[in-house]
Image (cartoon, rainbow, N blue to C red):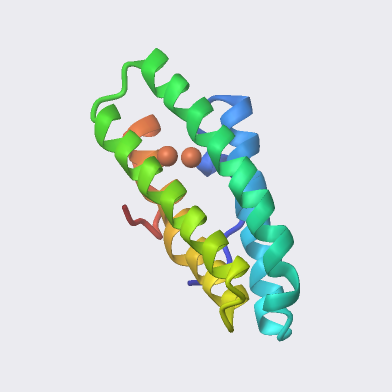
Length: 136
Ligand SMILES: [Fe+2]
Ligand SMILES: [Fe+2]
């Protein structure tokens, strides 16, 4: 996918959740550059630890916001979050097992799963619209 930049069109109207989305989209950009420069494995450890802590907090905060706003399909959204968190745990396990190319797997997961979730499911749930590069 092409690099995504956060702008006001991606705002969900909540400064805290917007700041979290912005951070994750910026992280995706930084990781994409590392992949291009052949440094994926070098950044994988730090990126995964950041993602582990950050996604847990973000999903919790976002689910609370969705509950406050009365978003439909909250249960389904929670399941998607749980599945993404499981992916992070699996990637951590693979990193600990020193799987070759783990950096590339982490970065591809951010690009193909995490960012599309923000642009697709989050936008649909919180704004009733979705950004052009949408996904589940
Ligand atoms: Fe989100
Ligand atoms: Fe979400």
